[in-house]
Image (cartoon, rainbow, N blue to C red):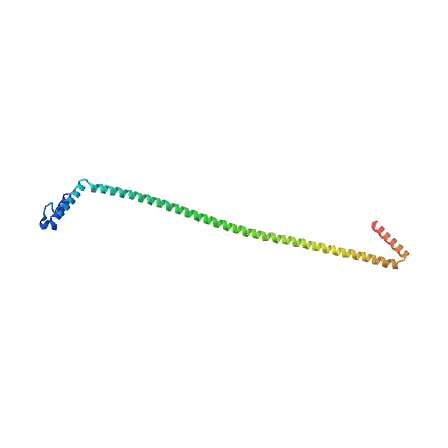
Length: 185
């Protein structure tokens, strides 16, 4: 404090107003202002205002430091949460891709199964149609044979009835009876 007072007095005595002869006169406004300023500084120093201001600034700095640390901790927590959510999003994305891939595979398998079922159904229907055609063909052949036999019998009956006499008919009947008896015994 003494050093500050000495510096202030030195500056006051070397001022142009003091050199002009104003000296220690209270009528000199420059001197009064310097004196009031020095008195004000002295009161501030005596009341330990700089140390109070320093404490206030230190407290404020500590408060800011704690807020910064809290903000840093919150930021780290937010980054951790963000990373966690990003991992979850990636997991969900991967799961969605797996679900889509499974759905595509199942759809492809279902399509292949449907193709196989359709091919089997077509094969069954073709087989059934071929069987129906074969049956109809066999029926038609049988019907044609039966009709041919009927016509042949009718023609043979007409031919035989025109050419055969009663005696020839009796001979044929007797021969047929003997033939049947021989086969039965």
